[in-house]
Length: 320
Length: 307
Image (cartoon, rainbow over all chains, first blue to last red; front, side):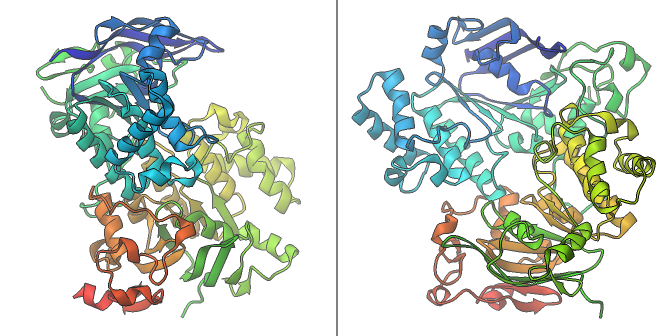
């Protein structure tokens, strides 16, 4: 399978105030039709990778490395090139569906605009296509919804509208950043079901970003775990949850709530605070929170190395 | 028989024509944690705010140690507020960005304990910052210098400064990473044991509610549909909505419709999403009825569903 997206040694620095290295030498690839999960705590750089790839970083940020989308280098590409790709072949769904829709435009206008812009359709044709897409993402009473404003829809419906918008131009890759985090449990399950069926229907590749390993586990083929701006482990999703190699991955798995187990005395959590990106620790950045850390971990940063079926950045992986 | 700390009777809140809370009644005992679960728009935060008189109420009573909070005067309410504190969902926006953590924690003391000297105040603040795991050096830092989890510790410390008897926690961990949520939940558990406070813990996250609660209230479109001791609720839920919520937590999607609060169906509010609905369900909203020890369900077919 050819790669849709190929990121090599991407580094992103924020230069305003105290310089912050948000993403450090991250390489990843997404194959056609594949679903890749990216997991890590707030501030681990998981969102910034794609902000950088899509040219959405603030002026104070610098990105270096290479991002190839369908073979074409897009890192630092001129706006005209990015505008042709963004929202068309490569779309993004953000966490908060309220703030990613324009509050004063009708849903129909916002959806149709995408096709008028990218596909040069007439407004009438575009609205028809938008209506069909709302049906496909199972928005009930789609025709009435087209006339409504974002505040008239529930959170789950707004997220469906965002997904519909992302799919209008049949993208080869959709990046979904915490698509279910802001939603109720009842609706989360619906959106995950929807993404799963859309993946098969449209053959779109997905990148699913979340702080909750449990939320991506059910959908992703492969998972990358990030800590302090670096990839610390990659593996097939099933393998990762069965045999985590990095102690951080093991901790994240321990924190996934399990309602089927009897309640514990203490709720599992990861001790300590997320790392301070402005003042990185000298050795392994996870060492201060790691229950297995030894002298070497505090002095020497472990490189990301190849293992059977994946990669790990740890001096003493938990599994071979 | 111990008198409940808080007794809520037929509480109603309307926003214009929309009935956001309808006839909500429950008791909260001293030292008890009551979980409140439901979807967004069900009225969870409205209930929290109505109890503390932060929004106008259109009917019912809120009895705090026997006194009706909704009818007492401003001076009396002010005194009750010492004992009733709240922790908000968004830890960053609920802290004043221009005040240090120390200044934030000093506010309640300046208002309610004016006799304290500056030094005594400082000692109380340092002790509380230590207690919530931040360390006294945190007093000089501003909210933006803290992570989300640390901000929530400041919010909890602020609520604890006056030794409250009831802590209302409105989704206190929902905006935090899963890996950090447990830290905050465990902190609340420790504080409760140490100070014997009662808690109303609001969350849409069932795993978190199960961890903390002694009893759980389930709310749907402004109506309480089930009240049960924690283990009963999770092992043998009765109301079809409670069952659907639990199934959703295990990854089974609830039917597609999400009724907006403005279009509450006639009769039982859950009727149009309920797999067990029958014609008589359209007649009236069923009242909460006892189906077991401390277990109440608002469903015509509760008995049937239990067998």
